[in-house]
Length: 69
Image (cartoon, rainbow, N blue to C red; front, side, top):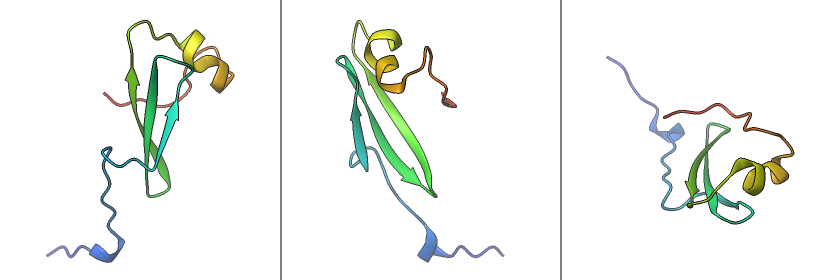
């Protein structure tokens, strides 16, 4: 038998994100944090480009984060 310690369980969803990060136009990223790890859900509007909308914020030529599909 496996017992779960529900006192340590976290339940979150993107309807109430911990944070919302606006891109420089054309979208946003909603963020929830679970077990100390940030999980982002991106909303990308037509015409969105890393080089214009996020690259200047991140300071990188491409996204360097791990992705899940």
